[in-house]
Length: 154
Image (cartoon, rainbow, N blue to C red; front, side, top):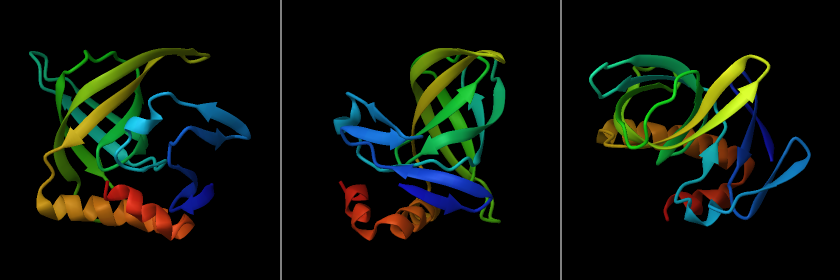
């Protein structure tokens, strides 16, 4: 399902058993574990690794939901590493603050070199930020298919 997001085209895909992206059907065996629908929305994200180095990484999300984000970065982060997160929803308000942990990492090689596709489970939103994220996600989901909002409540 294609949709337009502020700043350019995007894609909304609720991962069930498969998803069409770029004319190709992609199957994903872990799809039945999703609690929240994900939207492809490249908002800015600042991660601070909560380890000895306290390294900060500035990137953008590949997709996100109320429960997690997917990012593509040049450095490998260790599984289960806790991170502090600042998420800029590009809505003119302050960044959303939350915490998370690295739950999966896949190395990828491209013409630009090696990078790491990284999944981060997020949580610990303030109530105000949780409502803001929920509204942003619901806005993009509702534009495409209002019945999909029910999936967010599971």
